[in-house]
Amino acid sequence: MRISRLQFVSVPVADHVKAREFYVDVLGFELVVDIAGPHGQFVMVAPPGAQTGVVLVDFSVEGREFGGPVHLQFHTDDLDADIAELRAAGVEAGNPQEMQWGRMTTFTDVDGNPISLLQPSAMGNRPG
Image 1 (cartoon, rainbow, N blue to C red):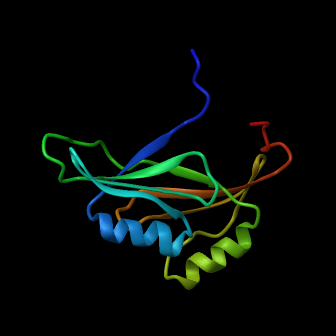
Image 2 (cartoon, one colour):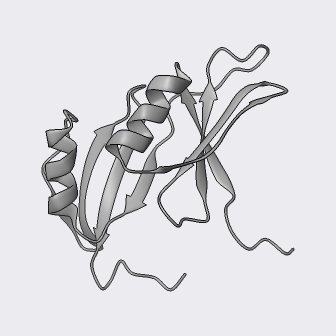
């Protein structure tokens, strides 16, 4: 096997435009791809400089059914600042939770997919 990294994670969304706006305008992701594909619109976003993207998969793609929401967890270096920014944007971000491996908060995207931000402790930082 020559697998070197995760290419992308598919997240089910009801509306590409609203989902793209949330990930780009609220979370600060970059729009990597937004093209018409053989199975509908292909929209990929990613944190700035990331190698792994999030593909926003339209629920309405014919012949495809997706399971429930997908949980995403992203790394942050400043959880408190990110919580403040999320709340300023109208996102209901939870209060920080203290864990052995770091501090985290949770919230949902516009389609109810759970997202958490983790600011790892020394224990939570693993070599990548």
